[in-house]
Structure formats: structure tokens, C-alpha cells
Image (cartoon, rainbow, N blue to C red; front, side):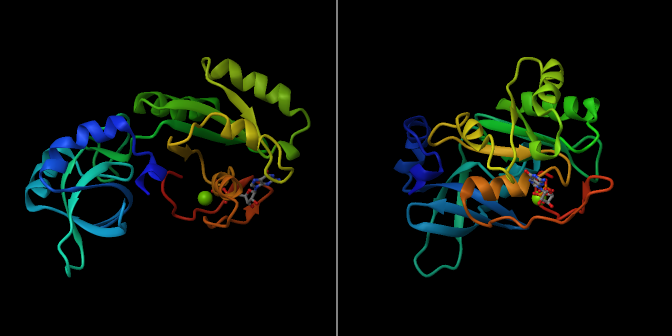
Length: 238
Ligand SMILES: Nc1nc2c(ncn2[C@@H]2O[C@H](COP(=O)(O)OP(=O)(O)O)[C@@H](O)[C@H]2O)c(=O)[nH]1
Ligand SMILES: [Mg+2]
């Protein structure tokens, strides 16, 4: 089961000492206050940090979505305990909302970051560059995705313009409404890889995720066409 979440031989190797300690590997899927939802071979486990890890986290930072962890499960106990976090391959950070200094890791071990912009919005090159810089810094491969091609007069020309800002990273043109470009997006992901989507609210991230998964997993929003902005749905990485 955890192979589905990207478990590989490299992770297996890094996990060996934890396996000797009798711990179980898992990947953090969701973070809710003190509890973390972890995908494991025995299913999704609601988990908490061990006392030692909680102490370490004050300096080293809190484990986050995408982290591989070592867990123990006590029969009958409601929650599993996380004892260790495996070294991260990539880390997506942002400044904590309440501090200029604290950096917060908001996603770990992401392979591909889709930087999503919409063809009907006024494109702000500086904002795109900021998103791209954050994506590069994370260590993941950035791919620019231009959504809502159905609303553009000349999507390919718009994409060519963006490509000049995007410093050699691929620029894809998609329209979920027309079912256009979704294959080219998938072509940037290999089995076992993890992607994240970033971009302003209303550009079509949730719609894209639902189209890729083939199910309505994410709530999408009605857009005010006049100013091409959506309402905030409070989803991560908006
Ligand atoms: N015309 C058009 N509208 C789209 C497309 N993809 C998404 N939208 C619309 O854009 C709005 C915002 O989408 P949403 O996925 O909620 O954006 P998010 O805030 O980035 O998650 C919704 O009303 C979607 O129906 C598309 O390919 N074409
Ligand atoms: Mg959304």
C-alpha cells in the first residue's frame, strides 16, 4: 500500500534502523493541529509525535505533509506514535504567518510543483516569478501550467510569452473544460512521484486536481468572471 504513496528502495534503505527498532514506515498525508494522518501498510493511522520528537521539533521544525516517518502502534491505543522523520529530499517552505523569521515547511518530498496560472486573469509576471522561485527553492521540478485555454484567443502565443519568464521550465496549456492538455501534465509525473499545485486563488487548481483524479475530491469555487478572481476556499497551498 505505501508503494502507492511513493515508497521506494531508497526510502527502505533509510528506514532500516527504524525497522530494527520495530517501527512501521508511513507517509504524512494531512496535518490537523496536533494530529497527523499517516498512510501505512495497515491503513490510515491518526498519529501524534513522541515526546522526544515534539521536543526536537521546536528547533528542527514540525513534521509535515509528505514526510516519511517511523511509527509504533500499540494494540488498542487510539493513535499511533511518530518516533522519527526520514531525511527530506525536497521541502517547500513559506514564512510563518505570525513571524518574519520563522520558516515553515508546508510540504515535503514533492517531486514536481505545478505553478498554476490562468489565461483569463491579468497575468502578473512578478507574482509568477515569485511562485517559480519558491518552486525552484523547494528542490522539486517546476512546471508552469496555464489553465482555462478555452477562454484565451491565442493560448499558444500567451504561453510563448510566459516561457520567456519561466527560465527553461516547461510551460503547458490546459483546459479542463475542453479536456485539453491533461495528458501532457501527467507526462511530467512518473509512477511513485508526488506533485503539488501552487498559484493564486481562482486559477483552477482544485478543478485540475479533480480532473486528474477523475473524482470530485476538492471543493471548487464559483468565479466572478468580471475580475477573474475566485473566493478563498481555505485549501492548502492556495
Ligand atoms: N472556462 C474554464 N473555467 C475553468 C477551468 N478550470 C477551472 N475553471 C473555473 O475556475 C473557477 C476556479 O476554479 P478552482 O478550481 O476552484 O480554482 P482554485 O482556487 O485555484 O482551486 C471555477 O469556477 C472553475 O469552474 C477551465 O479549464 N476553463
Ligand atoms: Mg481550490
